[in-house]
Length: 418
Image (cartoon, rainbow, N blue to C red):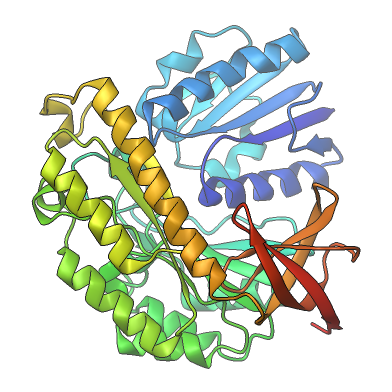
């Protein structure tokens, strides 16, 4: 049988898809991650925004165009939120949510909707296929933050952590094969809270790993000296900190139910730069939250400039039914669109300013694939680099010659042994 495992969501979904892919291959099936002709499609869906949920529904139609007789199985956040939006579609035979996703391949002959309660303990049945360049390791699931705009705690459940030994064993196994490992989860900042541990303790257990280690998205409150010292002690830590911001104005942050002030955020960035002066500070920003007025938005732009982010993912607010913020009156669409454009321009200038600091400096680049005639890859700071020539899946010491369109064009000094 030919099967497709298709990810419509985040890095956590990607980790889960990689595990499903491995399970199908072990059973002798031909498997692809691309939407191509297949007998079976397994869709791991997303519900973080209305648009993500719409794309998840559309994906069913895309599969049927490739093979009108295909069997379609749906899992993930969108089906957890509303399973009937998939079950009434043609050829969708089985719909689950986020529980028992690690056992999905064993249950492909099941039919109908089976949305089980989200587990209270971490499900440790995933075992992704090993890749050579970059791997993801999931350490945690669920979220306890309940931001007023976010549906994820309702579809992923409460925060639950994977045992330290299980994480360390997988990281050690992968580090012998791949060159970079990204630590991921729904809220890795809460790692360990339900098992008497912490993210800092986990990082301390990874001190002997001889592989680039990168952290996924962080909540600002997890940043402290113990964590930063643990990261500094890693052999090949990638100093890129994705610190979720969402707004740069305290009143909006309170309405979002974010648990910090802009002053506290700035202090944490300052602490990071004390340990890692050239660290890339990346973030997410929501434009057009219902209580955001023009003055609040201007303060956000000023705060973005003050922090000097290396990259900002700018989103427009997406109203999600069932959340606290869904009760608030939406801002006019043209206002939201204008703010998104203005924030994107400030983000572009911040990125340019950050990148220009590296002209003439050396970086370590992990090459991945060819793009626009160049070999493309990322530095430890998550700077996108281009080089002439070279091969994929290599570590290169490079010197930045110029910055163009947000990309560092570099000259190779030497190839680095892993």
